[in-house]
Image (tube, rainbow, N blue to C red):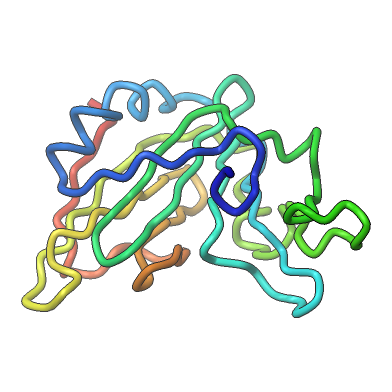
Length: 175
């Protein structure tokens, strides 16, 4: 069974800045200069809220990056395995029931405002604190008129739209 019953999606968990950079740095760097199409989030229909445990799908047209944080420091970055257009909702294995989950791209107006902008930088943000968040890696996406960061919100994804605070060491991949 696939993660969250998302067809074709199997996360690959990594921890640590250098491990993540080795595995995905070149491909993340190649996104710089690409235009953001959409950011898809999973919407839990019954509760009317974002299901932040599920992947964040960042669509640049030719590449779709799927981001999932888990536990305290594990991050999965996968590429082009989730199709939020071809399967906008899914049934968690019971096709007789209405789909409880849907892909949505209009949950955060801040994300919608970034659509169509060209990516200027991808940052690996290494958390340097004295608590359990130490060593957690977040991803920052920088655009001409805004930014967003997908971070570990203690065993789920979180999204911020401000500059990262001083607890993060920023590692630009723009070159």
